[in-house]
Image (cartoon, rainbow, N blue to C red; front, side, top):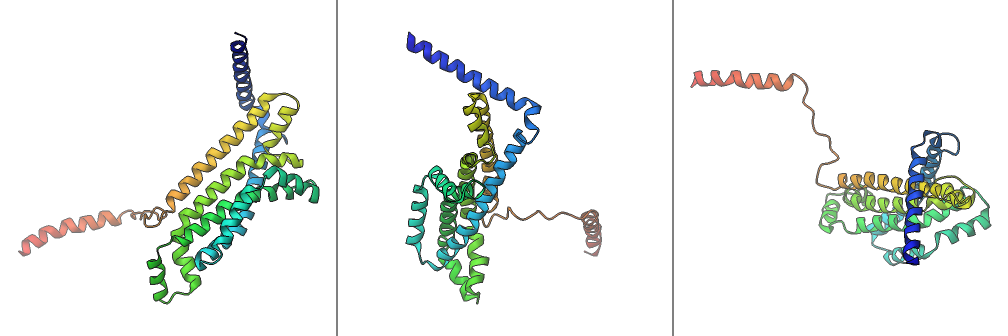
Amino acid sequence: MAATVQIADRGRRAVNFLAGAIAYILTADNWLGPVGLATRILEHLEYTAAAVAVSALIAIPIGLLIGHTGRGALVVVSAINGLRALPTLGVLLLAVLLWGLGLLPPILALMLLGIPPLLAGAYAGISNVNAAVVDAARSMGMTETQVLLRVELPNALPLILGGLRTATLQVVATATVAAYASLGGLGRLLIDGIKVRQFHIAVVGALMVAALALILDGGLAFAVWLSVPGTGRWRRRPTQVAGIGDESAASQSAAKPAAARLE
């Protein structure tokens, strides 16, 4: 009986936290000001974009080079596994001890999450391009750079964007650790809400992070769908100039009776 009462009490608390979080989100005043939800979301997106951009600048060129030349595949696998094994929070605390508080420690910690999927996607995308297509491009006189940029890269784009999608989701979900380095973002809601025992605010932070992850995942999934080679989804449909189609149809209909008279 006591266990049932405790379970019911926990359920009521969870419902109260969720109701308080929804009421907090629906209150317009909570979105305004330097510590409002809008500001926190923008800060969270800034940290995510910075970490993913730096990770892409490092990982994608290395993955393209190794996938094109076929050399260093063992290094890629070892690097991916090694980076994934490092604890993000531990790296953040170490970076704070070395460089102090600021933007650099969380960006370095988040890069450890962004580099492995980007590196794996770029390498797998280039290495899985059909060898016959690559040989045909070389037989046409293309240089290695042209083969990489004009043939291999367009065919590898879905896997590269898939790696970007995975990296973005992992970074946006973990960017809350920036609050441990005295920065903003949605992690402030989690830490401050737990600190002052206003747990509905922490629930607000969790809901906002989940919503951002779903939105970014949907947008990047659509980009992957568009990038599939051979489908022509990137191309815009040709638009018909007003009047030209009507004039051509009228000329064709007028030409039919004339052709009949000549026969």
